[in-house]
Every structure is written in C-alpha cells, then in structure tokens.
Image (tube, rainbow, N blue to C red):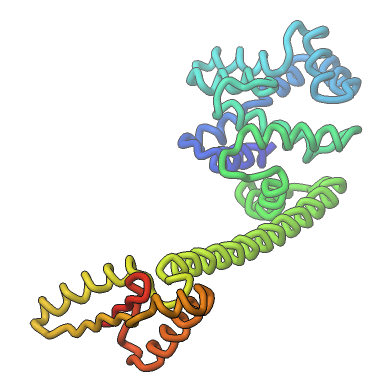
Amino acid sequence: MCWRPRRARLLGGHARLQRLEDLMLAGLLQDIGALALLQAMPTEYATTRAAASGGADLLERERATFGADHAAVGAWLARHWHLPGYLTDAIGASEADSPADPFQACVVAAGAVADLWLGGDDLDALRERARERVDACTSDGTTLDDLLVQLAAALPEIGAMFEVHIARPEHLESIVDHAKELLILRNLREIQDAARARSEARVSEDKVRHLTEQSRRDPLTGVYNRLQMEEVLEREFATAAALQQPLSIAFIDLDDFKHINDRYGHLVGDRVLYQFAQNLQRLLRSTDMVARYGGEEFLSC
C-alpha cells in the first residue's frame, strides 16, 4: 500500500528514531512476501487469505499450506536481494508479538494500524491490538488516536505524492471521528489539569509566603522578631558603610515592666506589649522597621 511507508515513517518520528527513510522502505517491503506468494500461487494464496479470519489465523494457514508465512518469505527475498540485515530482520519480524528493537516495533505497529485501517470482522480486537503496538513503539506520548487523526489528515498529500486516489474505508470514518472526540476530551482534561496545577501552585506560593512572613514576626506583638532584625541590621550596616551614610538605631526598653506582670498578671503584660508595639509602628515612617528584641525590649532602625 502506498501509504504504509508514510505510516512507518510517522511512527519512527514519534519513536525518536534516526533512520526514518529506512523505515519507509521497511514499511513498503514488510508485506512483500504476501505479494510474492500471490504472484507464485495466485489461486492457492487467494483461497488461503479468503478463508482466514484475521492476521493470526492467516499466518497459521500460510504455514500449514506453504510451509512458511508471508513474513518469513519476505525475509528470504530480502536476504536473496542482499538488503541490509536490519531491513531483512524487520521484514521477518513484521508479524512478531515481541519485536527485538524500536525499529522493528515501528514496522510491527505500522502493520497493526494497517489492519485496523482496512477493517475486519472484529474491529474492537483490531483497535486494541493497534493501540498496544503503537504504545509499545512511540516514546513521546503519541497514542493510536493521535496517529489516526494525523494519517487521515495526510491522505490527500500521500495520494498526490503517489498520484493515486486513496479510498478511506467506511468503518474508518467512525474510528477517526471517535479518535478526534477522544483527543478533544484529552486536551480539555489537560487544560483543566494545567489550570488546577496553576491554582494549586499559587495557593502553595501564598502559603510559603505566609509561613515565611510568620517566621519573621514575633507571635505576641506582631512586629518583626530579633532574628529578622539582625538580618536587616547586617544589610543596613553594609549599605551605610558602602554609601558612607549614618545609620540611626533606637533601642527601647519599657521601664518597670516587671511590676505590671507582677501586679496585673502576664495576660495584661502581654496586652501592654502588643499595644505598645502597635503604637510604636504607627509613629514610625514607612521605611523604618521595628522588632521585639526580647522581653520588653524593642529595636528600631
């Protein structure tokens, strides 16, 4: 089939293989054995193919009737023509369940997609087999649905290339339409997942910022803590020294604060510390900073 090489090449691209032109040749030759059997024994082979219920049954009937299946005959022809070993091996393994390497896996997958394209008695089984072969071949996340849509879109180009009209089997319309629907649903899910991930990331960033800010604050008074003030002072001292500018620091201590705790209790003392810190913040400039240094001691710069 003139579009089989293109399908093998397309699969090779999704499998990230380098020898894409060789894959086109392997796709073109993978059924050469069937053509040879049909040419050598047209009546017998046509009867064998007509009696077969599927790919596996055809292989068994070929072996029983001719002593070899069409893949083995194709490999024999390739050796007789002195084709490279990897092409010969790919033709011989074109019907294998476990291909030996990615190159062969693409050829096997191309054949499975061809069987689905042409249709048969059990489309569900053909679709599942093609899906398994494509998943085993590709390495970039491309699925059978992706591939079917790409192939359907490429039909006019392939037909023009080979100067033939490529008919699309009726059953394929529903398969391609179904594949497009699945791709649309998958894309919608990916968009939803991406939006959810962005939202979760923003929430996580907000939580990190909140926790970071909390770690810099004194939990009782709400002003910055001593550790944060020490970091700021180190930075401010370096800036003042570099610019040769003065730096003003106020160290504030509440006199006789212990008497408040002793007379009114620590809850009242805590309330006094909180209210003092809030009042102090309101008296400072927006560029100033205040921190609880420890106990009833505060530092501002």
